[in-house]
Length: 156
Length: 156
DNA sequence: GCCGAGGTTGAGAATCATTCCTATACTGGC
DNA sequence: GCCAGTATAGGAATGATTCTCAACCTCGGC
Image (cartoon, rainbow over all chains, first blue to last red; front, side, top):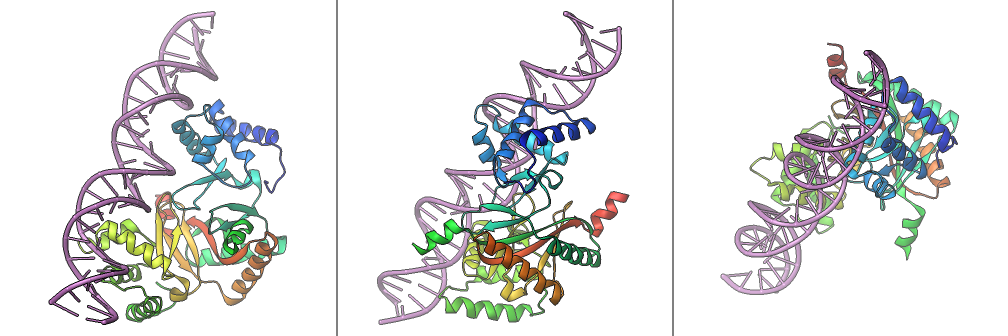
């Protein structure tokens, strides 16, 4: 579930416009990638996407499309589970959110904070980054735990 | 800089005791790894550590030591820049902290929040994870931005 | 409708981090 | 000092990702 409830079609249009503005083509492969990403309910790895797009987009093209879309600000990478990069729609498409990451299976679930929590967080973030001399571009709260399925298995 | 100012020697002793309790040997290679990690001021990758330990600990042993120390709760992995896992001392050795990550060069700097910010954050985290059915094990705030060096280069 | 420039694709090779395998070396308890 | 259980070195194997290069499309100009 995306935290914004834009439909696949709406997102497709937003992406199309955004790319046109920047003079980047929205080719068939890229459209397929966006669609596949919209189908999951959290960041997805290249392997997972390749699976969905089997026979449509070869792996090398898939990686290239991901790189282009990331460079154009459409996708955001999430470096979660060991060794694999998962991609999701950038925040301006999916809404600002944070991640619950399962330490067992690597599953990532998007969550939103309530407005007051988010405001507070942003204050803290900006103070901290300023004091370290960093020019701030974003933040994510990564919450680690066991997802319900893994917690259950651990008991059995 | 570690946020706790335990000396290398103190940490070494804490690690030694912790491992003994769990019946894990504190071999020369593992000691070297701990020392090398204590020398950096943020999480370090296997390659960086291998560089420091050139000729002392071969790569395969280094990885094995990292795995053992992680499993024993001495080290914590940080999956930062694309494709590389960086290790740092676990929080009970280095203090609870968050990360400022440079989006250009991948450098990671540890930061602590002030107590009220941290308290607030913990409340938020526990509410969110409970509502998703996750059993909470930890959290980190990842703040992204440009470090002073990279920001400066961008200007030049 | 045709052309050329430049971006894009496909397929496989190459690279990089990490893990696995196996023979050898060490350690602690007896 | 010997044994069983661990740990190590070093190289091969794996898996994700990136690169290379020839063939292919696409867009704007004619």
